[in-house]
Length: 72
Image (tube, rainbow, N blue to C red):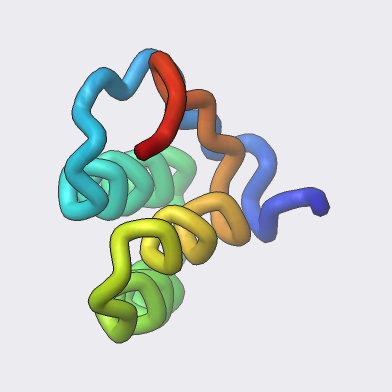
């Protein structure tokens, strides 16, 4: 599946904390000059989920994610 913003590439994120991933995607969206309302939409969608794997799925749907090491 191609992410909504494939030009936003998150690489070498060593933290498995899903909130760190959400933050990295938000920063990547900002650096790509994505509209703030769209960034808010992403944030609401990602934080709506309490399960870490669901938060990661939302992040992967919005940006190209390359995690360091296996996901738990």
